[in-house]
Image (cartoon, rainbow, N blue to C red; front, side, top):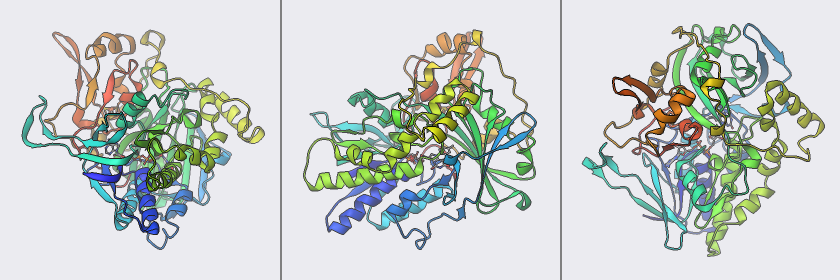
Length: 536
Ligand SMILES: Cc1cc2nc3c(=O)[nH]c(=O)nc-3n(C[C@H](O)[C@H](O)[C@H](O)COP(=O)(O)OP(=O)(O)OC[C@H]3O[C@@H](n4cnc5c(N)ncnc54)[C@H](O)[C@@H]3O)c2cc1C
Ligand code: SF4
C-alpha cells in the first residue's frame, strides 16, 4: 500500500502529525495520503498517562476543540505537593513547574480516541490492530516505509491455519510516533547513529491505577504530587493523584530506572505507598477499575537524539520531549509532531530528497526548545539524592532561572544496579486486598490479551545470561521490575530457569531498558495484542 506519509503509532504525537498534514493539504488543495498504524486493538487501548494536560499544543492544532467536544472536562484547580515520611505528610510549596492553573485533568486514552475521529474526518486512514514490526529500506538505505507483522504465526515460527502475511506500507516519508522506547525507533537509532553526540535516554517506570472513590473523598480538579516515603533518599520518584470526572481518581507512582538496589520492586513500592495514613482514606471504600504501566522518558533536553534520517523522522516521546519537572510530555509530543508535519508537508511539496532537516531547525525555533532547555539540569541533579536534588532544583529555578552555564549529563539506566552482595534486601508488606493488591490480580484489570500460540515477543540475545549473570549478580531483577510478573525464576531438579509469561506483558518496555546486560529485546507481538485500557 502506498501513501505520501505513514505514521507509526496513534498516540497524541502520531495523531497530531496526521491532523496537521491533512489540514495543510486541504488548505493548499493538494492530494496527500496519510496513514496511521496502531498496535493496540483500538486507538487508546495502549495509552497510559497521568494525565494533566497543558492545552497549549491542542489550542494551536484545533483551536475550536471546546466546541467540538474534546474530552477535557476537569480544569485543574488545586495543586498540592507533599513530602511523605512513614507516618506524616508535610505540605511543601508547590514548585512553579507544577502549577497547573489553565491545565486539565484528562484521560489521555480518551483524548486520543477523540483526536482519531478528528483525524479521520480530515481524511486520515487509521489502522488499529496493526503493529509495525519492521522498517523497510530502499537500496540506497533510505527508509521507504514499514511492514506490519504477520498474523497467525505459531510458537514454533511456522504459519498456523490463521496465517495472514503482514502488509508493506510504503511512503515518501515515515514518521515514528511509537512513544517512549519505541521498538522501531530503537533500531533506527542504531542504524543511523541518531544518539551519537547526544546523551543516552533515561527513563522512569510509571505504574498507574484508576479508582472510583466515595463522593465525599472526591475533589474534582485536585492535583496531588508526593515525594519521599516509601522510597529511600537515593531513589528518584514520587506519586500523583489526579481527581477527575465521575468520582474517578487516577493514582500512580513513577520511579527513576536509574535505581540502584536490585531488590527494589516498583510495583510493591506503589502498593505500599497507598497504605500511607494520608493516602489510604481516599481509596479505602473505593473500587479499583483499571491497572497498567508504561515507561516514561526522563533524559530531557540533553537526551534528544538526531531527529531525522533519509525517508523519515522521530516525533513525540519516540524522540523524548518530556518536561520532567512538570511530569508532562503530551503538549511537547504534540507540538514536535505538528512542527514535523509542517516541515514534511513543505518538503514533499518542494519535491526535495534526503532528510527533512527543516524539522529539527524549526523545532529549535519553537517553544519546545526553550521550555526543555531551561529545566535540563533539574532531573540529573537528583542522582546525588533527594535533598541535593531539591536544593539544586530551587537554585536552578529561582537563582539561575534555567540559565546555568553548565549542563549535567546522564548515564544509561541499565548500568546503575548494584550487585546483591552490596545491596540491602527490601521486605514488602503483604497486600491487604483493600488498597493494596498483588501483581496478577492487577494485571487482570489491564485487560491484557495475547494470542498464546505465537513466538515470544521478549527476545533474549543470549538465553543463558538470565541464569549465568542476572541471577547470581542481581538476584534476577526482572522478577521484580516487571510490573506484570512476566519473568519468573522456576526452580527445578535440573536447576533454575527463567520462565517468560509473555501473555501478561503490558508493553511498558521496562525490561528492554533496565536489563543490566541489555539482553532483552522487546519486539511487537501480533497486532491488537496487549493491554486494553479503557480510559488510562
Ligand atoms: C505514568 C505516566 C504519567 C504521565 N503523566 C503525564 C501528565 O500528567 N501530563 C502529560 O502531559 N504527560 C504525561 N505523561 C507523558 C505522556 O503520556 C507522553 O508524553 C505522551 O503519551 C507521549 O505521546 P506519544 O504520542 O509520543 O506516545 P504514546 O502516547 O506512548 O503513544 C504511542 C502509540 O504508538 C503505538 N505504537 C508503539 N509502537 C508501535 C508499533 N511498532 N506499531 C504500531 N503502533 C505502535 C502505541 O501503542 C501507542 O498507542 C505521563 C506518562 C506516564 C507513563
Ligand atoms: S515484559 Fe517487559 S515490557 Fe512487558 S510488562 Fe514486563 S517489563 Fe513491561
